[in-house]
Each structure stands twice: as structure tokens, then as C-alpha cells.
Amino acid sequence: MSKSLKPAYLKIEPAVLAYERDKKGIYYAYVTIWTIIFAVPLFWLLDLIFLKEYWDTMLMVRIGTGVFTYLIYYNGLKRKVHFMTYLNVIVGVNMVIAAAICAWVPYGFALPYFLIFSVMVLLLNTTVYWEVGYSIFHVCVSYVVIIMLFGFKNNIESYSTLVTYGGGTYFVVSAFAILIAFNRYKILTREIEKNIVIDNANQQLLEQNEQINDQNILIEEANRRLRQLSDYRQNTLRIMIHDLKNFIGSNQMSIDLITRKSGNLTPEQKEILSYINMGNKKLHYLSGKLSDSAEADSGEVEYRYERFDAVPEIEAAAVSLVDAAAMKEVQLQFHIAPDPMFIQADKIFFNHILYKLIANIIRFTQKGTVVDLLVANVDDNCVIELKDNGLAMGKAKMDELFNKLNNPNEAQQALNQTGFGFSVARQLTESMNGQFYYSCSEAQGNYYRITFKLA
Image 1 (cartoon, rainbow, N blue to C red):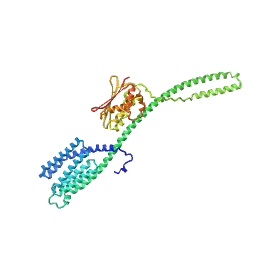
Image 2: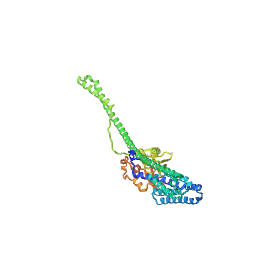
Image 3: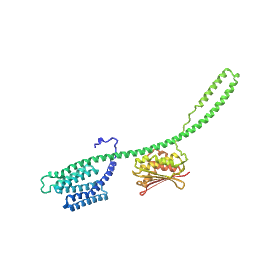
Image 4: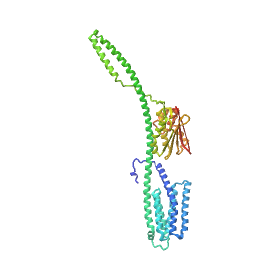
């Protein structure tokens, strides 16, 4: 496929593409090699039917070929040779032997051998995953072997006999097999590229989900602060309006008292009194419309401790990440005690701790991993355990992830940064009087534990 036909968004690191291609190539190489080994009895059955005089000799050849194939495969694995090296050696050896047998058998029995050889080459090129150059090389080697050995036969009239007795069929089928290998390589390579793009998109989506959750935490804190300001404003306004109404009421009483004695007032004094009365009524009206309040923002986030049941919060945080885990092919398993567990903490930040920890466990684990979430009451403590049965991170890696923030006061500054999830979860837990523990081992994977005293 021409590079110009690839979508513009398809930007893949060459090292990543090479790694994924080798991973898929190894799998198909193993399938191909074991197919060749297990096909030995089928080829010998053909010898038993058509070459009864030489069945014992052919049996030794077939067994020797199978054993030699296995030894090449075994030594390649043991010496950690690149799979493409011993795969080409195995395919080359079997192609040469099969081609030699086809050229050696008598004319009358050559057709079935060429047909079986054609099926073998066709099956090989529909199974193996490699560049088409390897298929062309092996098929050309088989052509050379067949043509050279066929020329040594006695009483040969011309090479038209080779075409008549099955060679032509093999030449045509093997050419089609090369075309199949070419198309298969392009299709599988395209599929690998697509899977890499999907994996990268899923990883970015997981990071974006975490950033969205971080923003939600900030929004929740801002909303809580606004509610506090709203309460303060309402209380302040009530006091101000109450005092203002008392003042307006006192003024109105004075105005009414003076009005009752208006007989002693001059016309100018009565006019002034009417202005005062009108202004007092306007002030009374405006006092009912008072709604402005002072704005204040200290920039600090203080914990708002309250007593609440931790179980629903744990379940909500875990359930919110089930879809993210499914995209990563990670399975979340819940083992939560049914009894309520009341703790004294900040509910918003408690939920944030759980989200941060679970989201980063999903991010750093491998596909197909099972993550167990266990919640239980242990010695009057709410204990939250997470077990990841994937590959162990290693103590050094975990220490690095959990110690990115050395000062607990810096936790708020890292709420909207990626890569700090483990450290933020730990620091927030400890700053709210909780306990955080982590460990890893090759046998059990990665382990995390959060502990809060029951209230």
C-alpha cells in the first residue's frame, strides 16, 4: 500500500510498529512450524499409497525431516534467535526436501506429490506472516531444485513432461501463493496499525477521563465554596435589612408623629416633611430589593470533615471506572462487605482518592489483568484493598510513583496534572488521617491498601 493512501492521523512510532509486528509474527510462526511438524504423518501416508517399494526409506526421510525441523525450532528458542531466522531455515529445508521428492518420484506418481506440495505451499503462505520477499525466495529455490533434479532422470524427452505430470500445477499454485502472502502481509500490517491507533486512543481517553474527574473535583470544591459564600451573604443581608428596616421604621414613626402635629408647621416645613416621607418610602422599597453581596476567595482548600458511610462512595468511584477498565481489557471485581462503615473525612476528597488510585491502576497495568477491590471492617477500621494480578511494577517504580509529592500541601497543586495520581491519592489519604500502604511481588502482582478509622 502506498504511503500516500494512509490517513493523515496515522502517526505511529516505528519502534512500536516493529514490536507489534514481531509479536504477531511470532504467533503465526509457531502455528506454521507446528503445522509442518504434524504434517509428517500425512506425507508418509502418501508415500505408503504410491511408493510401496520405498515406504520404509521415505518413512526415515519424513521422520528425519520432522526431527530436524523441531531441533532447529528448539535451538532457535533456546538461543533466543530472532524468530524470522529459524522460521526461514525451517521453511527452506522443508521446501527443498519436498521439491526434491517431487522431482525424484516416477512419472506416474508425480502428479499427486506435486498436488500435495502445491497445497503445502498454499497453506504455508496463508498462515505465515512475513514480507513477500521471503515467499518469492523459497518458491524460486523450489523451482531450481525441481528443474535441476528433474533433468537427471533417465529417458527424459523434454521439460514438457514436468509440466504434464504436475509441475505446471505447482508453478501456477505457488505463484498464487506468493500473491496471497503479499496481500496477507499488507492486510495484517494494516490491522496492526489500526490496533495501535485504537490502543493509543483508549490511553488518551483514560487520561482525559482522569482530567475530567480532576476538573469535577475542582468544580465541586468551587460549588461548596460558593454555597458557603451564599450562606454568608444571606446572613449578612438579613442582618443589614433588619437594621435598615428598624431605621426606616423609626423614621416613619417620627414622620407620623410630626404629621399629626402639622397644624403648627409652616407650609415650607410641611413641604420638607412630605419630601422626607417620600424618601423614606423609597428607602423602604429599595431595602426589599437588596441582593448584592461581597465576594471573597482565599485560594485555599480546607477539608470539610463529616461522618458518612464509605461503602456507597467506594462503589460509586469503582463503578464510574468500569467502562475505562473495559477499554483497557481490564476486569474489575468487587468484594465489598454489605454492612455500612461510617468514617470521619471529607466526602469529596475521599471519592477523589479512590478515583485517582483505581484510574492509575488501570492505566499502569497490562491488558487482560484482573483487579480485585476488597472492602472490609478490620479491627474497627475501614480497609480498602486493591490487588492487581498483572506484572509487578517493581519496588523502585512504585516508590517513584508514590513519592512525586513530598509535601502534603502540594496535593492541591497536582489535582489537574497527569502522572501524579498515585502520589496524590497517598498524600490526600495521609493528610486526612488515613493510612496508605503499597507493595509488589512477582507471585501476587501489585497491592494497595487504604485504611480509615471508623467513626
